[in-house]
Image (tube, rainbow, N blue to C red; front, side, top):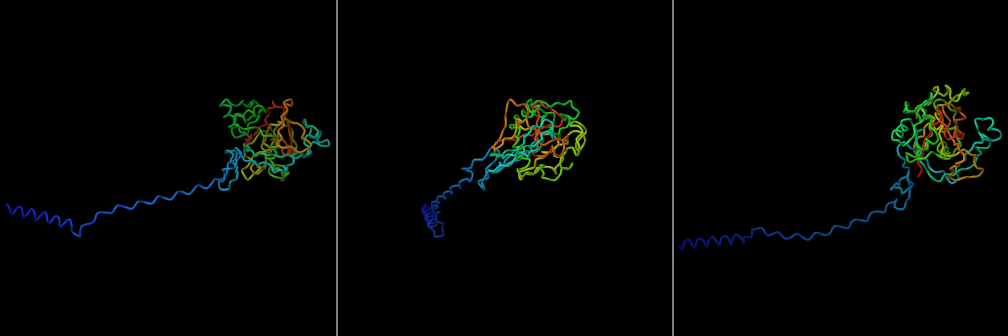
Length: 324
């Protein structure tokens, strides 16, 4: 019995010695408290914070400037400079209206200066049959006439919608959130105000530039035009396009005349800003650009045509603009 007690005591002494051995690992020290992370640097103020752009523009955050932002299929047209541009070539001055005939009134295109203070987006092409049909199918538009020999609707989807009255054209544009162009918008888009005769410049037109009638026009509804009677598909004459830094406008000369929103009256004698002529007592509206059944004079960018608002013929169509 004493031997067992001695053995147990020895074992306890050995265990205590082992616990106090210098080779034993010390208890880990508590980690030092972590330093708080540095506060994030305040964000740099946006360059666009104080910039207000038009609805057809967006602010470029790298420059702080407004940049064009038209929807696909439309071309951004900038506003004019403060000096504007000159409209009117004097075709109807000094007896010119009698020589032109076809309802032209004397002194209707007297040169005058025009300033446009807002940019706008313009359709790249004349409104096509396919686009018009989508609007008609959605019951937002009225269909064009379709019984004429050269009527395009609905069988030629990539041709301009023709046989469309001013009322129908305007209704289509409104359904898209757009408008018919004013006459000043149309000419500014076609020329940029540099005095050129045609949208592409001053080179005499050929059938590579536009679908129009070379030589003497036998009949406005006859087998005329570069490709026989009737229109061409849109974008068929890229050499005659009006090229802007922001995009390309096709068929501003030839193919079909294009309705403008303005009523047809004489130009003013002095300078004007953002002209938009709306006279409810005048039922005749401006048409521009000439058509496949017009001569090289009729497709000049400054040439004014006119038609009563119910007019629906094969050589008349339209395009729209988006105003800010």
